[in-house]
Image (cartoon, rainbow, N blue to C red; front, top):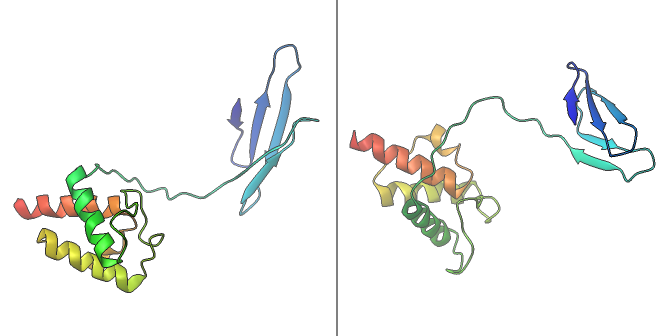
Length: 144
């Protein structure tokens, strides 16, 4: 069982049948990046903590057809083989796209879907799914 005890410490309580409770506590330090726990002679556990943005993000998954079109445009722009795995989760940077490639990819989206992508919106695109979601939002906005 894990419990947060105030803003300055985290306590983990582990119980096993026919054994006494073991209390493992961590003190939070400014800029905490990783945590290691040792269980009194047992193997240790360690994990990394990452800060997350506190802003709320609501998204709806784009249609599979839109994701497929976006993937095709990305493959073409980056000269990737047709059998290369480009999915909704694919990040442009992991596919080898630099900033110029990303601009050209966005221009391809604009041409293919008949939309205009603002610079602020373009900078939020990191994955194929991000692009597909934005495209569907802009297409719906243009219809209204």
